[in-house]
Image (cartoon, rainbow, N blue to C red):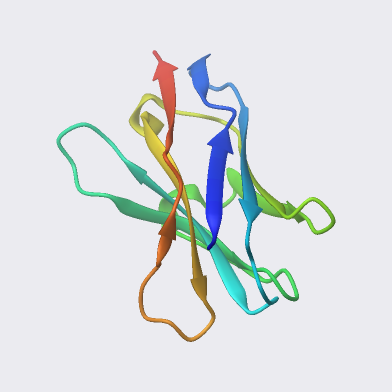
Amino acid sequence: QVQLVESGGGLVQTGGSLRLSCAASGLTSSSYVMGWFRQAPGKEREFVGHMRWSGGSTYYADFVKGRFTISRDFAKTTVFLQMNSLKPEDTAVYYCAAKLLHSRQYDYWGQGTQVTVSS
């Protein structure tokens, strides 16, 4: 069973940075895609970006391009979301998720970590 545990959220001022971590266990192959999502109060959950576990290719939503970066520590099966130039509108609960490469939906989710950006 895949388990995902996020950490690293907190309160930061506008323009600041945070790095979120997602520690994964139970990945039985390298054919996973690790995604980051977020959900702000009163809004639907939205896609932030993802990384293919094998190969490390990434894809980002337009609103975070140039500000957020996904990376991984292969040995520790941990995925990171480096967030720079944070804005108040980035305030949300951030979730890590995993799916098999050809799956249509993310099957595994972490518990989420709160990110609050003050103006």
